[in-house]
Length: 92
Image (tube, rainbow, N blue to C red; front, side, top):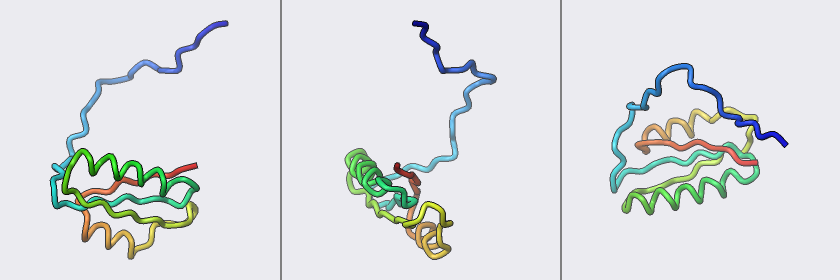
């Protein structure tokens, strides 16, 4: 048996993502599920974990309900108007 390491070699330097704003108590973040089975449940776990990390943070879940559909303009407007950040995910 031969083990093959699936990791490749880096082609360039690692650049940290720096387009972030601090998330603090009182902020609201969006959890956006795409409708695949398990996506809502998965994001529920993520939301509870984030709330433990940032006490006082508000978390609101959206579910577009259909993985094939685009996010509705209404959902996107509400998220951008009321949330400081969004976590989008899918489940299978």
